[in-house]
Image (cartoon, rainbow, N blue to C red):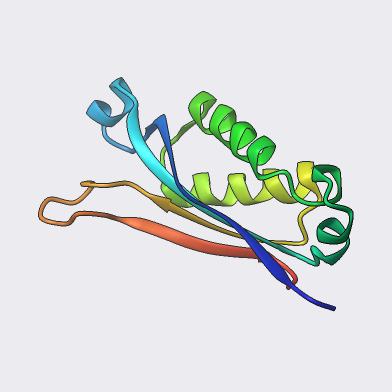
Length: 119
């Protein structure tokens, strides 16, 4: 079976995330990268969006979900986003990276990458 990867990079979302009171007071910008694996040959042959992973619909759903969330940890955010994509969009394998820029003084970026499902 072929495993092709569709990706979305640097999906910027305003979200409440963090453990400190000041982080919980105002939304911060997080950046999310997604990779969705599956066999896209039939979608390419049909040239129809309903035969592949609709990355626009997935991105909009992730955006709405994360904006409405109030996670303390980016680890939880990544896990829940992966779960949402696999369950709601029937994606067999997903890689989710959550970036929280400037979360550590002196560091440009802090983040986590997880992979869930079977390739």
